[in-house]
Length: 326
Image (cartoon, rainbow, N blue to C red; front, side):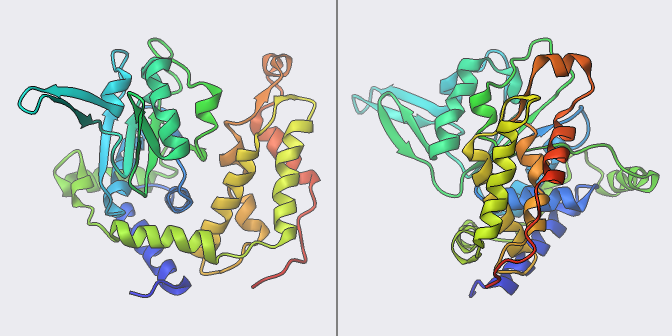
């Protein structure tokens, strides 16, 4: 199958439709998660219990046709439980690598903030460099590799907040949210009766193979044009977070790269081979909401939020109106 923009767009529609068969919610959220996967990035879901965070992650893993594993993070989880370790085999008189669950394509890190920092740090190298070092030996992870993590923001007892270095490695932080209407709430119940099971993700059929999905990622990386005006627009947004007086720590350059990658993925998903400003604006809050640290005095007063800061930045930066299209 020749992969071009029209075929790419059709595959994206099929993937979103397959996930939507089991996840009742906002289709825009599904498109954003798919964009993150196409951009080869990691996603952090943060929301209240019972809103379908794990269900959504598992459904995407199955729809993309990739190998996936799930790690339930707990306080007693050790780094070697994630990466693996070398075990002595008496029959061959040598150490053999027992690979951990991180050797997969899609890693579902459930309740990631329940593990201590030492265990959380086991993910840092894998998330950034797509490799794992075990007892001094480095092992490459098979592409595609990305992490879908979940955490509960309201139960602080027995949890360990993610360090800023790890938060920065997530391409986006998303929230599933409650069902927006009564009809959607009723649809959740109707589908549960129809499925006759609590976990319907087994019903999701793979839409693509890992090889096809890697080709889709390659198309986003190589075939989507970004004009200099768009690049400057992204840079201005991120630089403004560092210059705002209410922000103590602004976004790193990784925030700029995240916006660029997601904008290109969304452009391809919409059937275009060039990026427009709306592709960028769609992801600004999702990319920056976990990368900004406000000055404590403004947080205590409660008058300023990260969202209001981002909205103010967007309102002050002129949107490019003349830019080249391929």
